[in-house]
Amino acid sequence: MSQRSERRGIHVDQSELLCKKGCGYYGNAAWQGLCSKCWRDEYQKARQRQIQDDWALAEKLQREEEAAYVSSHSSSQTQPPQSHSQHSLATFSKFEEKKTNEKTRKVTTVKKFFSPSSRTAPKKVPPEKEREKEKEEKLPGRRESHGENLLRDLKGIFTQPWEMSSPTEESHEAKTPSPSITRQSSIETDRVSRDFVEFLKTLHKPGREIHKHSRAFIDSMGNKKQDLSAEELSECVQDFYQGMSDRLLNHFKGSSEKVDRVMDQVEKYIMTRLYKSVFCPETSDDEKKDLATQHRIRALHWVTIQMLCVPVEEEIPEVSDSVVKAITDIIEMDSKRVPRDKLACITSCSKHIFNAIRVTKNEPASADDFLPTLIYIVLKANPPRLQSNIQYITRFCNPSRLMTGEDGYYFTNLCCAVAFIEKLDAQSLNLSPEDFERYMSGQASPRRQDDPAGWPQSGSRVNPVLTQIQHNLSVLSSLEKRQQQVIEGAQSLEAELTEWQESVAREVQEILERYPLDIKPRASAIDAENVENDRLPPPLQPQVFAG
Image (cartoon, rainbow, N blue to C red; front, side, top):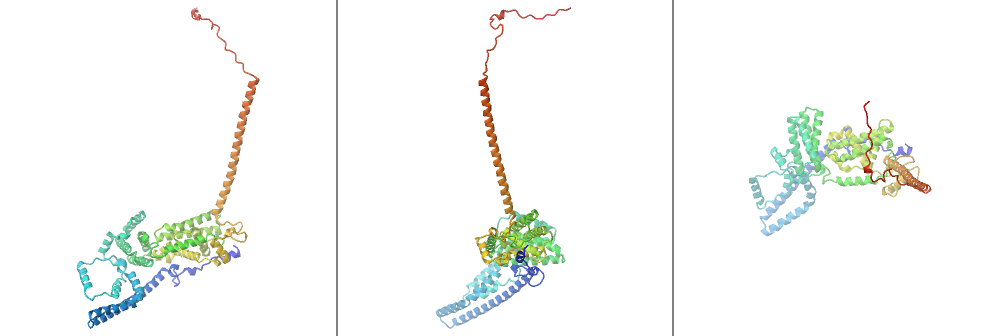
């Protein structure tokens, strides 16, 4: 590499991949540089503060409305009915107008987040209690305050979603699912369900408990998926993972290997069943980010391997094969349903990249070589729904996989690569702003520059596919020339055969004219003219005499 290329090299310090809290785990851009554990702690703290603020707001609103109600009720005893009605309406009108902005901003958000209807299926109210409730609502002067509504909605905020229903309710929900989530199970879903049941049979009693909690969680998620945002859905799934992991650790007496093996199966079963509901949900802007990233990568089609200082020589067959496999793996990620399987595609892609670098340099690849090559692979592949897949893994993968291990390392590098592509500018590629804008707009291409110092340099191979196409075209041109020669030879042979036939015919005609053929009449038999031949004696027969 030239000095100019070395200056353009992409370098990321390994410490930048770790959690900003300094816990030693890998961080993630979606979690503001924190690992899943630290992000969860911060989220829980912020959530508790929000709950306390909303609770204080609800109590304040309730006290103010009760005071206003008492005030209006006491004034009604000293005023005529008509004036009382007008005064009461005016009082409450001013009060409602005063609290509209604050109530709309916070109360509505809290009710949406912690609404019991979004947590669990509505419980059946006995007819007696329903009639009593109707009587209370019909009492004169009875008006339920907004504070009471909010307090009622906040009752179940500290109870886990899958634990709010009794076993009877869980079975009822399993038998009569909501019509909005009823769908024909796919072949893959059925296969995963059978495999999960077979796996749980090996665990005996714990297996039945795991299956029960998993089914109850799936039913509860199906009932509230439309009421929760993507972050809230993620929080529910992560809470379930944490609770299930704690139970398994207690049962297996701290054996993390067995717990991880069971959690992998639980994650596969849960996320296969919930995939259509939680992947790129309507409440998120994942689809918008997907389109923006896809358009961004398309606009950067002109970026060459030399611009990114990628230490890969694609003309080497083994390297070219590894590059193709890496592209295939990262594209195949979108076809997987389970976060662990999507991570496996990223890991496989990364290993192919390391192999390509190793073969090119004849030495083990370094982290500084890996990231530019990963960026180059992403630009060439332009994976479908890249942002949605990254967000899906971030939200619903078992957090232990993202915090440590090679899966977490490769996934963190992929997030860095996508962030680099989104922020790629002229300075990143050591180009002038004018050239960068011309390349982005399509007015020019670095492959068409006459300057020998530009990219790609003379003799360099930008793309092995283009080189193969050129080779195939040259072979086709050579075959066309050979075909033309064969056709010309066949035509010449045909002309020679025609001329030979004509010359033979001429020679035969000349011989016939020079030596005409005299055909004589056929000679008759000796006794042909004897009409009485039937009267002749018979021919003599030889006779034998005994001696």
